[in-house]
Image (cartoon, rainbow, N blue to C red):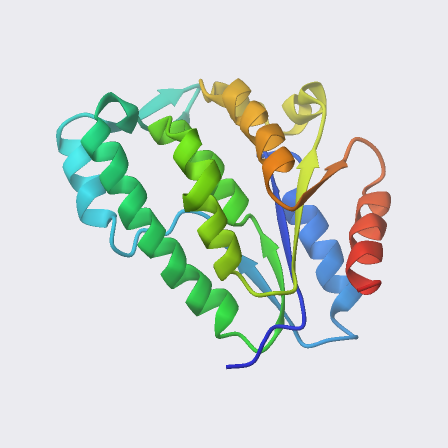
Length: 211
C-alpha cells in the first residue's frame, strides 16, 4: 500500500464554496502531480438497514419547503438508535477511508470530508461529547498521514445570495456552531471565503507545498 503524497480535505457549510475551491486546486495541481478528486460525506455501507428501519418508525424523514426537499435524522430521540447509528457509521467511515484514501496511490483533493460527516452525526444524534473525542479522533488517526484539513467560512448573507435552500434546514445555526467547535479540537485550519477565492487557494497551497 502506497502512502498518499498528500490529501487536501475541504469542508464547511453548504454554500461556502467548497466545490469551487476544490476545482481551482485540481487545476493548480493537475500538471504537477497525479491527482484525484474525491467526494466524501455520509456513506451507508453497513448502516443502510438501520436507516430503513428508522424511516419506518419516523426518525428518518424528509420535509419539503419551497420545492426543496430536506432530509432529517432525529436519532437523538432514541439513545439506542443514536449509538447504533454511530457504530455502523464508524465502520462505514473506515471502509470509505480505505477505499478512497488509503488504497489510492494518487494525491487527493477531497470536496467534503470526514469533518462534514462529524457535523452531520452531531446534528443527528446530539452525541458531540463522544463524536468529538474517541470517535472522531480515531477516524482522524486512520486517515493518511499527510492530510490537510480546511474549513471554509462565509458570511451567512453571502451564502443566502447563492444558496437560499441552505436556510431551509432547521439545523443551520447548529451546523455553523459545530464547524467552529471542530476547528478548536481537531487539526483544522479555518479560512474566510468572503472575497476573491484566489486568496483561499493561495493559503491552502502555501500550507501544503511548504511541507
